[in-house]
Image 1: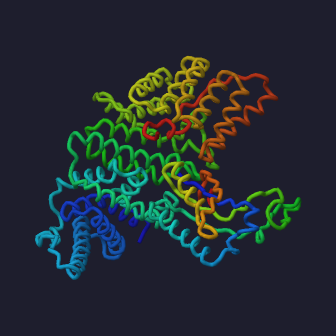
Image 2: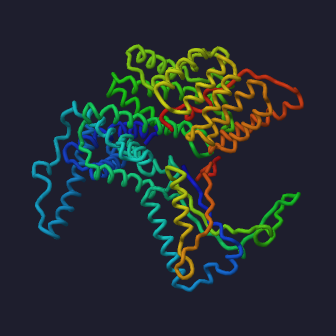
Image 3: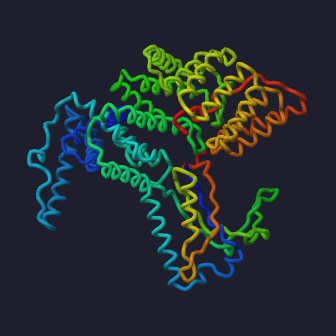
Length: 134
Length: 443
């Protein structure tokens, strides 16, 4: 079964302690962790995909107007408390294993090497397609 | 090259793959290295045969190429080791030469079986065993398997190599299991084949409900096992179950891939040929005694397939068969299907009461199937509001999009009836929403 593990960063934390504001050695430790983590998932035969996303500064909310054209506004919804920073898709045997992987991602090292304890949202993937054919 | 000749090459290669691997294993040992060498030989054949034509003895050709690759690898490995620490030669000289192109046909069959027992070893997780079986026995490439399961090739390659390592570590000898082990090991083999079939028939994830190439591959492999073990009732039972289930494939989805339940399928679309083959297989097997769970499931599928219309279904017989199945296995899915059959025979009210017992079963807790069955039973009993609530609960819990759409459509249909007909009673239920749910193996 495939699961998507979504890194949901609290918006308040993003503003005060997003990765761009970390000291270089902490950024390096974080990236090293991610590389190691992805490699381990691949070696375990569980890795499907991962992507990191641009932050709220680069994010737009798009809605179709009545005439079908795009109405574009900046940033996350005003009521949003979290921002999606990135995700993994893993293919695992049990939901428990997905939670285990999510817990490891949650404890990725942050500033000063301390675990970030990011909330990770775990959803089963109900549809996969690499061809656009649904 | 024509499409047809490419197909015949592929079929030939895939038929020969396990025989060649078995022969190489027998001669040189080392499953992991043999498996790699055979893949290289298959690749070489796929490149060369279309150009140069198929050799007179394709099997011997493949064995020779694979053994040569393997001895090359072993030699360079040995040379490396010798450089490092003057190790003694590990391959006796008489085993370093390529074997005669073809020999000992009697062992080919056994070799394929031994390989299957190895690939489906209980020490492996199901995904690993599936991947290894498709590659070593099915002759599929890693890329093809990765593609079938929609994971990157590197991930699938690791799954396969971990499986091989696991086999190496567990020290399983390349030998037929003893009689005592054999039943248990055959059980694992059938389970893996069954999972491959189900992955193709009712994909647990994915937009399309049926991935026929995996089902066809499972049927092909099970057919091969049945040829090797013609006396085994459960092997025949599994093959019959696959054929009888797969026969409904053309009627099982609508033009947009939506699920059509058994009750509403156009039965003229069913594959008559597959049904008669499956019915013949299971009828023959059931007369021979020693009945197992695959045979019972096949028998149930046969009863469904033999009814020209849904109303003609022999529910008392299906109920009796599920009763037997319940005694043989402690699978809550079987209990559920039994409840549906009993509802068709005895009416829905008694069965709704019986289902209460299943609420306590933690294997079913929160499973959409329990809600789906309850919804059907409430609908049969004329309790529309309860049916709607359970259809919606089931729709929220399934991980298959076609099933979710089917279940929410049922809820919507009933909701629309509120206006037209204040009270309605429908006398149908679906004992086979999906084959996956009726399964023994898929707990």
